[in-house]
Length: 360
Image (cartoon, rainbow, N blue to C red; front, side, top):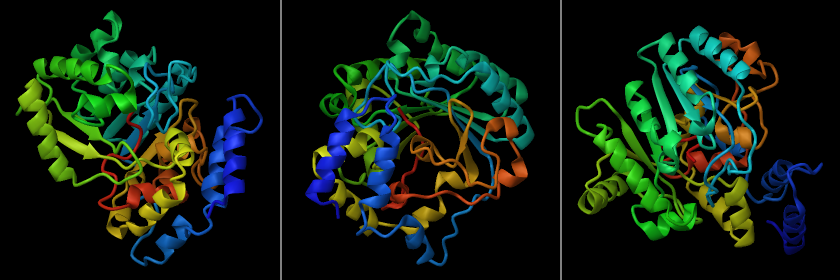
């Protein structure tokens, strides 16, 4: 358990942290998760006690590409620590390596995330290049919605999404303005509704249109998401009755104890209780279906990770496989062991996190 002296020391370091300091925020957070939660069994030991669970990759169908940490928003729950001040952006040379790997792997899905992925200046070029590889690859854009109504440039993106048949996975933490704005900032809900109306007008979320629009819910505090099926019913009812909006599916995600959410847990003195909650709700069935088993996550600078969350904690793929997209090796990567940490309890608690990865 984290005693008061440890917690005060950690918070003191965190408060002094600047990105360019020798002691990075990432290393502080890894220390918190790995060294100070000694009453919580390691995630790997929990897996080992569940004989049916083997944490290895089984395929490589999905390329999740983080196009950069720059974002027009600074959301309280963001595990990427994204915002307008972030300068990390994937360059075209790295995107070229990604495209070659997608070709060689025969990927079925390319998942574009951020930050706000739309803010990468090569975003449209990349989508066009992926479409030239295959007309059947599912291209996902993980949008915060507000970017689509932010200025004239981004207002053209919904039509671009439709032209290239992108699947839109959009973060909407709640169907009420108060709860959404608490997480995402003033007027975030209003702008999100405006963007959703534009997408609906283009056919997104409409029956038989083939234009998929999925929404994502995440809890506003230190608790697990409720029933995805029930929440979806509630979302569809409220959004249609109040705004005449439609969408395809609702995904629920669990807030992982990293980045800004970990900061929140520390500030509220809730880290111990939250980790115990995750442990108590460990679900071996959820562990069987985690996204990292058929996905590779590519960071803005081209390094390879098992998932976007590992990327934020600087936990690269295992040592015996290629570390950078330029050295891509399909056979080695699709049979790799998956690197785990205490944060992995978040994707395996309760019903599991149905939309793992970065949703800004």
